[in-house]
Image 1 (cartoon, rainbow, N blue to C red):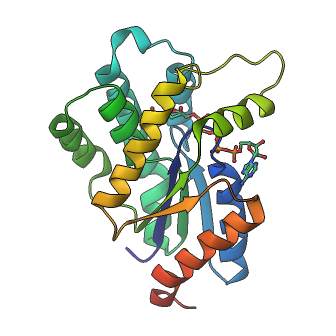
Image 2: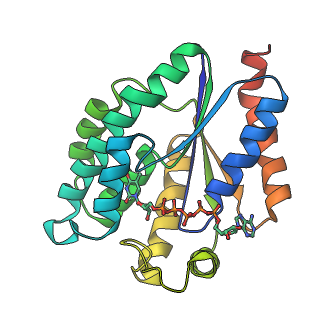
Length: 215
Ligand code: T5A
């Protein structure tokens, strides 16, 4: 496809949405058209599924049921937004994607890796990220950031409410993906201030992707 696909991954409050906006700004400044989106969500049907999952309604049904829900949302998101944008030659920056399913439902939810792999292939239908930036952060800092941002009357969502041990295992699982797939993934220190994190991300994007698509 003509465009480039970047995904941002990491624990809660790592700064993915903030970085997505900063990266989009840099890419637009370099003359690219950019679509910023997120998972779960990014299309009307997928946003409806997002609301249902993050309310915790499916927690009792188990991690495999949640994986199916995230995958259903992903299929609609790819069909209605991501693939058309990439075919137009746009850059797509997506806040969370397949690695979130691998880590949250796979490693933490204990859904078998082989089952998730098959589900992933069906869901993405060939739309793999060109680059995945993994924002690595001490989970106690990330959860504190997420708590600070939350409105006083807003409930903790489905996954933010898990234990610190859960979030520590998430961090380790993301780092393991980066080790297993170094050509696709790069780890960034999400403890850096936002401007310095954006600078570090831009270096990776420039080095790995922009030379292949100068305008
Ligand atoms: N999930 C998702 C699955 O289980 N399986 C899946 O397949 C998928 C796709 C999504 C949940 O769903 C799960 C994972 C998640 O638990 P969500 O609300 O989208 O839920 O959760 P997050 O993706 O974690 O989003 P957050 O908004 O909580 O975190 P971000 O986007 O990482 O952080 P951001 O940028 O909003 O920043 C948080 C706060 O920190 C500050 C910001 O100003 C903000 O106040 N901040 C920084 N402060 C200091 N230094 C920096 N570098 C900072 N960057 C941001």
